[in-house]
Image (cartoon, rainbow, N blue to C red; front, side):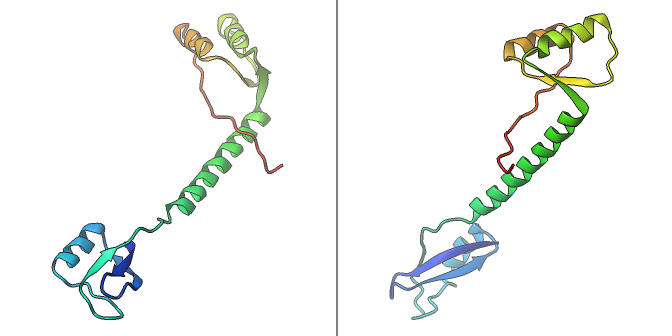
Length: 134
């Protein structure tokens, strides 16, 4: 469903109307099935109106942010933060076959990540955001 703000070119009044799709609006307009609610004129046009997508996007963004923060909390609680030494520590674990009770996470440049992958060391990139609510 789509809602349009319509304008009567005869009396200049505006009103809203719902349609199943934009093509349905065009089809009804072409067949002269649209009329003004005030003066019954068939001279109806669509006007510019702000879509309500913004609130849906913000809601989606909030859900994504919440999910990322949940993963970050899990990572903080279950992995060791090695900071900027990530590439060095990852190689150390890989080449010495050291078994660790906790995995590691930290920061690495794109170049370091590419080099690790070339050496057969698997890594995952995860977006890290600040929790501004705390």
